[in-house]
Image (cartoon, rainbow, N blue to C red; front, side, top):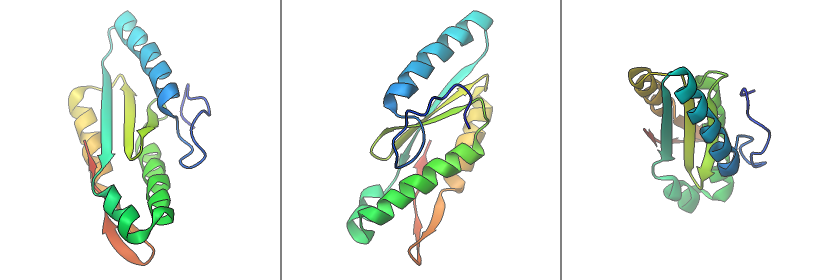
Length: 128
């Protein structure tokens, strides 16, 4: 579970929603300013997601969203927050993480986003 994250996410992905994200971001900005630590915000958009929905159906698209959310949560620290902020858009709040570490984390997420779905290998890229 993510520290400080209430269960206010949608039933589809099980992660924080846009509202929870906004609340947590405001709180983390205050903390970062108070203690002088870095705070990184990363946004990931699943490239070609519409193609998945159009060609393979919305149930496969939903599974891609679920698996993408799970993958990002697994690759992040417990102090980070992963949220779905729109259709195929995700945002990550990475408290205390410097820019280069955040870039490396985003690259790990993007590389790991290749998924096997419905017997067909499809590539979903998360753009950092």
